[in-house]
Image 1: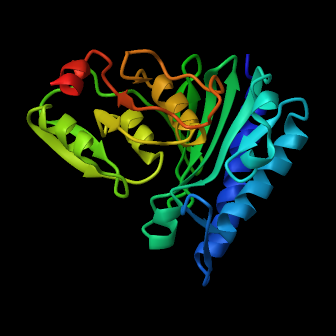
Image 2: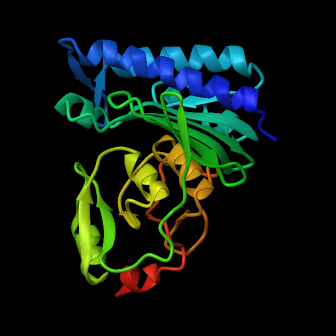
Length: 265
């Protein structure tokens, strides 16, 4: 059981990280590039330090796998962890660099491969989503908190999420087979949150993502009644592979939608 005290502690860390990000977002910042050519800014590193240091105080017995320090963790060590925090200090750095506001802070707790609790914070709007399959899903805005439910049954036209920075022919083919749709471009894990709110119905993703990109959003979506599945229909799991990269997935609000027909044509 995840205590309310722990949940609130992690929420506070996400908010602190968001404040650190905004302090840099509103200034002139430099952009570096990692070995995989993905962008890196001082905001990524400031949020990383804030969250990792905070989690070490909150849960010193639970290791942390963050995007900005994962290269320091041997695979053999990571695979032995039955509980861990998966952290993306700034999900959507490309959107951050474009200054379009569509980036988030992601923190998720993984237990035996299952994402059980997640927090997604949007620094620019101040919106914060949190939840898990056994906890429900909630949107917090200031002092106001709203419980979320997906749109089910989903009716035509289906609202489908399409990444602003990652579109390919497989995604276009999947969307074309869905029939009448209303596409919506949106960056980072905000897509999972819109699914949880009922503002979207389907989010197909073909191509690489990392586990810290999806875990927190999956928690929120599952708490609202949706799901995230691999092409074989299996729920997404974490820290089960040699690599930290995810395979293809389909995220759904209404899990009864015939997504396999759209996948295979």
